[in-house]
Length: 123
Image (cartoon, rainbow, N blue to C red; front, side, top):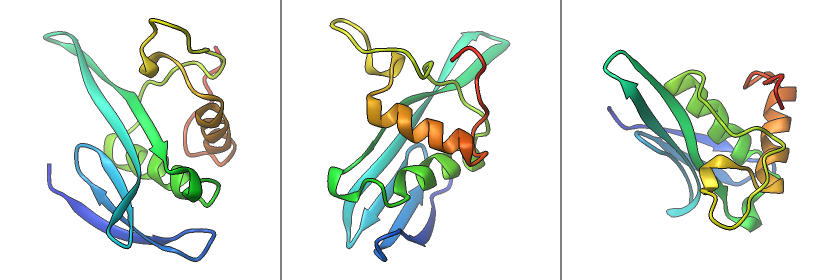
């Protein structure tokens, strides 16, 4: 997969550069400030799907549109992808790809409201 770079001005006026490849990574002034990771899951030779493995934005960069832009770019690059239910809670022994943090659930609720991802009626 080719690496694509693009830029975006966040809500705080910071110039954020994105690198789109396997992961989609956000940089500010050369420092990584966010990342979304997707993974391909093969069920058998004829059935596979893509799912969210993880998403994170540095705390001082949150609520500025970077997380939304990471999700938007992931959908543009990979199409729809599986994600945890919005009400899935983390607990000891559960993999982080099986649940959202409260911040992650809020981000995806916002992305649903913006029409970037579909509302999963099972949530």
